[in-house]
Image (cartoon, one colour):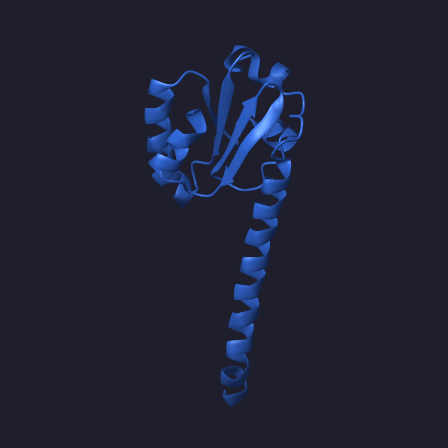
Length: 133
């Protein structure tokens, strides 16, 4: 029993470190997308893609607790702004794959064929509103 108590802090530290490294990796990958040409997604988005304006893609999953907080915010914004596309990652796997979405919630802004912004994790409504300026 004494051996377990001696290594338990190291195991917990290792799990915490793995969690942090994973999240930093996702964040860095998402940040690197900004400014690059968007992969061809018009065939998957169809008329949901605004050719002359910003299209805000909100990737969510119904089992994601952070998505439960953020989905109502995005639904309110979708009523106020054209071009908000709600993307359930389970139903639209190919779109998620093409844009490299590996975590939910994720918001990707497409503007004139480029990725103008990308956010991972729950965001405040104020921060989300800035995407439409």
